[in-house]
Length: 425
Ligand SMILES: [Zn+2]
Image (cartoon, rainbow, N blue to C red; front, side, top):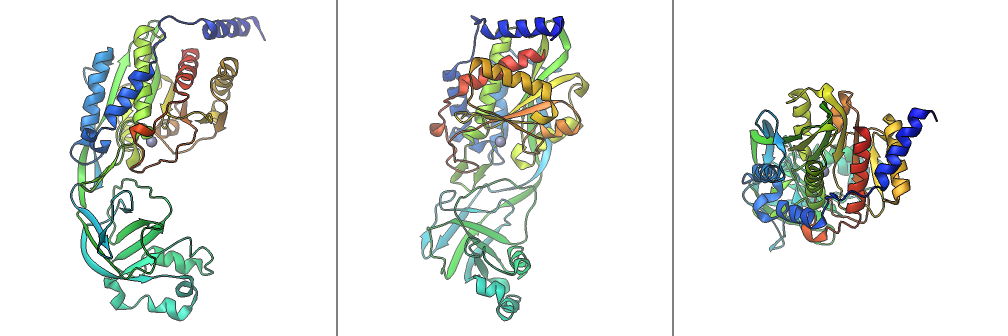
């Protein structure tokens, strides 16, 4: 180790151990932000009843309160996306029982508007593997029927090609009913020609004879969304940027009742970004710090993709970018996407964690297109994506709610990310 390295190493050690009086993270603040972002008024921060815009306005208000400035006097960056939205009725009835949306069933995000009662034909392994039965599926009279598929039952099917033909509705039927162990929703930029309904296993008999539904989905070509961008000016290197990103959108609603609050995904990440903003207002950073709250992440990284094509500042000014998504756990450690591309920075992170004993494990992972860091990585901008690990099974479902959030390792994760960021400046 040469003299310069030694001095850097000593100063890192000192900065780790000196407890700053202005230490800002505050679990009550973070909880309050998550609570507000997941409230019914936010409509799941998606594509119905201005949910996404309400969340954007809330973040702007919060940035103003903290003292973060807009770039060029403008916090919002508007863009438009195609979306298949479910603002009105979504109803499914089997055997005279109305199923509970989100809890007992979901419809596919690309589901077209459709209604009526339809006979159900169950597909079993014999149908797939017997050429005569399989041929019958193409009958014209099947076009006005629904087909029931339990993939778990069909996993030993010999004819995989036939199965995939069925799953792609080669029958040209009204649609498919799937039996699923876990209901996981998403959002779609396209609309399909046939209906797909996913029913939770155990709710209905798989020998169901008839299904009735009323699905009022609506495809909109240009739904407005907004990225939210704020800045804290650096004291020594104002033209050098450390960028923190987190998406604030979630899936919105499926019909009038089923709301997807997205507490862990990603109200938690938004709260941590705001908490970092509070810290950097009190502890003036050497470099400028930029905060970007992306919209439309769940719709295929639409906000971050738009931003890298129409950036509101020079992307070459970015020294390093840190994306946060799914950050409310941590009792099982953290995964760092792009760790293998930035070995030096990753070693620093591991070193801080080891000395300070923050999180049990830091998992390195190579690049992955799984959150908003990805469009930046494609533009060769150095970036890490942190997601925390723990016992939290509620992913893209109606149970990802405020009351499930424990923040067991929040403070540790916050300090780790903050101290790591300071070594980058
Ligand atoms: Zn997410």
